[in-house]
Length: 310
Image 1 (cartoon, helix red, strand yellow):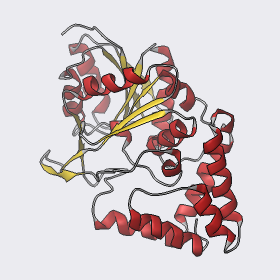
Image 2 (cartoon, one colour):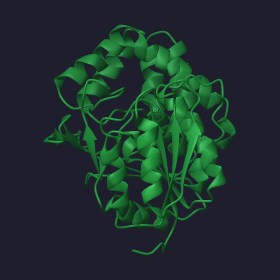
Image 3 (cartoon, one colour):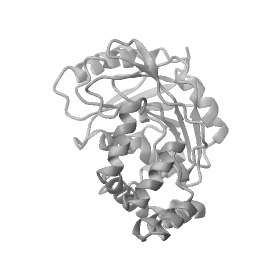
Image 4 (tube, one colour):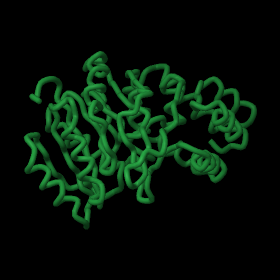
């Protein structure tokens, strides 16, 4: 295969991933779209991760760059790759986890949609995932979300893993504005929020593009099943969701000049609701238009607002 078509810069964050990373790297080589380069940001691995990456780099034609990560956790490592990607002059940029497996047509499928968006506005492709266990056996799929991806959803819910996300140049530039002092939950939720806040285009693909490995070392696992739903309910009850909102609204406030008027209105109403007493709290939350993909979880969010937990 030649190196025709748009260039995709793959952003791979690593940390002690030697058990599965070779399988992920091999899946990159099998992509039906071959014009890509790879930046690996390692966050201080003490196993054989870097040796595996270096040997891989010696066997392929594509450019592979290895850099030292910020050693501040997974999302800081991914956002550091956003800055590194500026040197690669790519058309599109794909987040990549160390222990997954990309399906062969992933990049080809992504590019078809991102090319329809162009480079004049932020674009974000994300997708459902096929779930596999530690041995690589299929165990199911991530939830299938059917409601439209918008900022009103993004403000209160993340719908797709960063391991499925591919962005264009305007989105990369938008992410590069993230304050260095920001305290984020995850790079994927932040990306969804920023693109929709800026009036960009988001495509949530119901067709899986990644085999997402589930194991005890996952930092963030699938949202599938009763366990994660209980965890989300506990996040409301324990005040964790409220702290998340504090952090995300502070980060959004630092770059709000990039946002659309409708997104800013949603932020203003949601922020006012959090400061208000009943019944204004519920009225303002309703006016903000925020929603979660599942009706039961949207109701739970309103219950959290009633209890002053948002």
